[in-house]
Image (cartoon, rainbow, N blue to C red; front, top):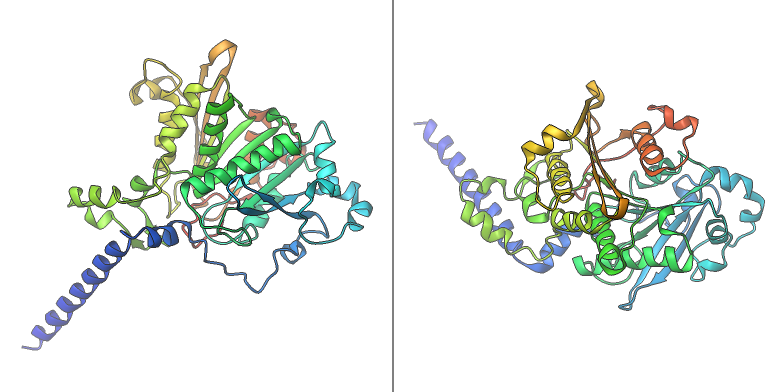
Length: 412
């Protein structure tokens, strides 16, 4: 008789969990809720710190130049220009005389002049993931890492999308693409950095932005950049939602696998789908030269590494007008096992007018939402993109590059 109340409590617990889950799904039908959940732009765990004072995040005085730029549709974007350390050291005395804080006239700053007047400068444009600001979590460590292959030449430029941090507006797929295009146009037209000295890099949600921006320039003006680096990328949001869990613990649509029609119904109600696989295929197909790098960790709890597999095969298939099966790609691709470090897949194909299309997938076994060794990224950045190789590039333990999906909790 004592067992019956236990079963009754368990039943009510299951009913309560089911009701809460159903309420969650119902809420996700709202576009407002979708915006808050996907972009998580209101989540900011460093409100007590001033992002206009990058020194609070471990940078030297005026090593980071905060700035704002306007978008064509009337928003104002907040961003950071991070100077490479060796270049900062060389011009430290002049930089220390600059007024601290954000500049609405960035072209008049010393940091801008060091970028725009050096014919050997390189620019890495970085698009972060969801939640937080440009200074959130491990992002500041990532910026420092990105310039280490050439600490006197590689500048890093990053922005907060509309609705994030100090940027105005409300995030949306169309809006974030506009933000990304605005930043890249600023780099080419105002800073006058040639396209072959620019790498576009995205992480998590930023991979969708990066791909859409790169595709935009190929379609609009056949503009191709030195490279496109996608860290913890996903094929599209509806597909990601089938396996995604908040914080790696609370599933969204995966419990509905036994109800595929309901899964498709809910997936079809997602407003911002971010179809990266489709955009990447179009980008590869319409480009003369492609330098694409996909990086992912097998223990990423937010974005399964299989999404990078999908994107690798999608990109490889787009290099052929006739189309390629996965079996054919597997038979021709270059594959290299790295033991505990993971493995590398490479695909090389001829492009139009003598061009080359190079696609590299780097899968690491460890890291998850945490880190990937500097050596992995540095060697690829230098060797694959043609940027100079320095001693640090040869050390896989010199520093860390964070590569996990962000999921609104990692702030990578």
